[in-house]
Image 1 (cartoon, rainbow over the protein chains, first blue to last red):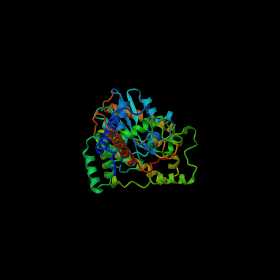
Image 2: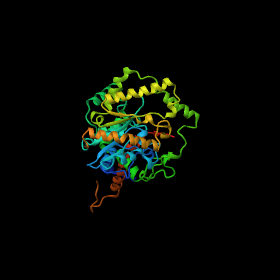
Image 3: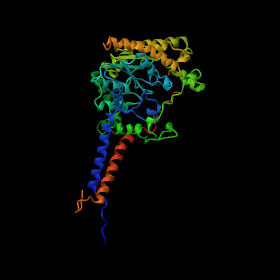
Image 4: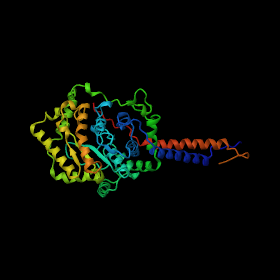
Length: 381
Length: 46
């Protein structure tokens, strides 16, 4: 009887596996250090987590290195969809208007993400960039009502831990304390995210395959890229609708309108002042001193259509809560402005997002305050 | 790795190496892929 010969060589198989994995890790590390984005203005929907595109912390930092020249003052825009520019068509983006108003001495980089918090991608990128480029300003939007900010973000916690394990974050005793408290309170709550980002810090798989998605083609199906599901995201265009020709920002669907009104009403119960120290501590833990002193926070305000439909008492409470939030951010050592309090219905495309007109008004309000902050910090005379 | 008397790599060894290479790349990709959520966070503004 003839013996079967073994067609596989285990040594060669494992050697191949090791070499393949190693080559991918080296390629990922290389991707971290190369400029990736072309003609970048903001993270629009097809290069956002909505479409399975999860930008990494290293990519945020690389974007700043790529876009900001050494003689320019970096203006890093963080926060949520409001500052991301949701509602503004590509040629009417508020951060582009801000760039025009500030001139060539400044470079505005919009790293805000939809549903983002005041920190997340923009915050960790700014922290990573600060040691090599101290002439930096940070802009973010904050809720109309006071509330604690999640230490490692909300919808995109991986970004914080990605930066954490890559050593991008600035040292902060307050943040370390808060992280220890979080771990003691809910041990292993972030175990999966931490494991993923720790492994990524060594093997760079998120960096490689996200870059692959951007440059050559997506490996993940999403209906948002219909009909060319797997096209390279660098070929995708910003499809934010042109809201200049839309009717006023009032949903025609009564259910949606009721839901939006309810959301605004939820911001009217008086702020319990005994919570102030807790909220202040959370802000100080998330936004470290190096960022806070360079920050300008923009207080959000909902569309007047909804504010006007509150009772008088609710309206007063809404404005009082805004006042408390401004007070808390000032106590944290941050500049804060509330230009949206004077905006009109036409400045919005829905309950909270700004139209092209609203974006232009926001840029006009932010630009002089940024110049003043730059002067106060000694960036320009 | 086995090399025959003429100094050539045996096809089985080469094949095993290439298969391992592909598995290594696949494993690297799977680390990225399994960490993506089953359903993306969809943010609808309108």
